[in-house]
Image (tube, rainbow, N blue to C red):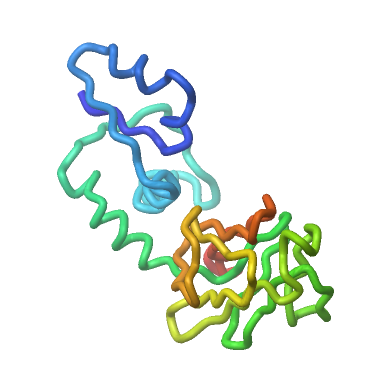
Length: 186
């Protein structure tokens, strides 16, 4: 038996060890975001054909595990199909456009930047900038304290992907790359 868990469930202390105690069971930890992307592949099965507006309820479904179902290449391909469109900071989504979005501890006029609520010793006035170049989201570090993407330091610039976490200097302030659906996609 193969049991797939999200990265968050697998991170619960002792849970993975308990699951491995089940006889003849392999536990696979999915990449961050894989659960949400998997639901997108099941969308047709989640809708109820008897009701025009609504979702059916089910507690289980037949599951066939194939190599492609758990392949990181398949997850990467699905993730590339959904491009990040916004930076999420403290429950507010900021659109990323071709115009650079300045991120730092300075106050910026609406639409020009994001004020990070941390002390000036943790975050520079102009800590970093983020902008869109075609299909890519580019972050450029301008700080002396450093900018980190998924706990890795950025040296110069970095291409950002959906779901990545950006942290500023030594602060605990973070932003996340998200994709917002258009109103006709809901």
